[in-house]
Every structure is written in C-alpha cells, then in structure tokens.
Amino acid sequence: MASKALKASVLAAAVALGAYWYWSPFLAIHQLRNAAKAGDSDAFNERVDYPRLRESLKGQLSAAIGDRMADGEPTNGAARAGAVLGSLFATALSDRMVDAFVRPEVVMRVMQEGKLLPKSEQGRDRRDRGNAPEEASGVEPSRSRTPIWSTERTSVDKLILYARDASQPEEKRTGLVFERRGFASWQLTEIRLPAL
Image (tube, rainbow, N blue to C red; front, top):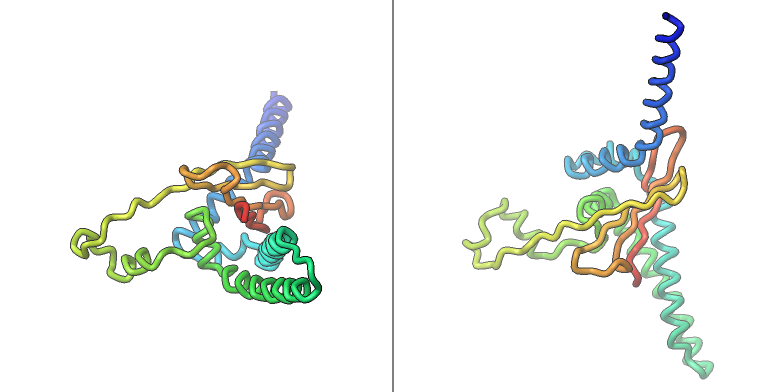
C-alpha cells in the first residue's frame, strides 16, 4: 500500500513538474507584464536580454534601409555614391535611435501596449495633469486601444507573443520573442517590428 502511494505521489510530482515546464513561458510573460504595470524595473530587467534586443532591432532597421535603397537603385555613379553615403548615414542614425528606444521604460510600455512607438504628447499631458477629466480641458476623450494578443510556440525553447491593433491586418503585428534560459526561465530577446 505504501509503495502505491509513493508511486502515485512521484507520478503527481512528475506531472506537476512537466506542467510547470510547459506553462513556464506564459508564467514569465505574466510576471513581466505585472512588473511593467507596477513600474518595477529590477524585476522587469531580470527577464529582458537588452543586448540581443538592440541587435535584433538594429538588424531589422538596417535590412529595411537596405531594401529601400535597393528599390530606388540609381543608375549613374554620382547618384549611386550618394545613395551609399545616405544608406550609411541612415544606418548610423537607426543605431542611435535603437539605443535610445531600448530602455526599460520603453520596453515596459511595449509589454503593456504592444507597440514600440512613443505615446502622443496629448497622452503625456493627461498624465501630467493627474488624470483630470478631459471634458474640463475641452479635449475630446481618446479611446485607448487594447491590443489583441496571441502566441505562437515555434519550438520548446522559443515562444512569440504577438500584439496588434484590432483595426490593423495580421502583418502589422508586433512580435515579442521569448527564449528559454535553463529549465523554466524565460527572457525577452527580440522585438519583431511590423512590416516597415
């Protein structure tokens, strides 16, 4: 009898451990979003690989710039040299832009709103006024759009959390890539921008 109870408890522990392993990325996403809502940058930063995040964004922007340059390929030598110089300048500018964007407060906002672009000045003014009623200021109330979230598990070690505005097509969604670290730890390693 004791042997059966031991086997049952070992089986239950194995099932619980397997379930925890399988659901661990969703738990990590939940904890990351809670840290973002609470503004807890220490807890948030533990789950974000900032160097890889920067490299992924720089790569995407460089590829987009390269595609744009290839589309309008100039035919004469002087124009081609100007295009190459412009491409180098645009790449250097995009690298600085990425370094400015990939900061904890910006990545926290991505986890909440599903987009990388900054809030409008109007939203910032509302926060500064302490959320005063908008009718009093004569500003029409804005409708905050909650993103539609979906997930795609591409392997046992990678999960992508997608966010898109309900009014946008699928190709306009932002992807947040999470990768497994160790047994059941996950980190945000990449932000996949919508088609640029």
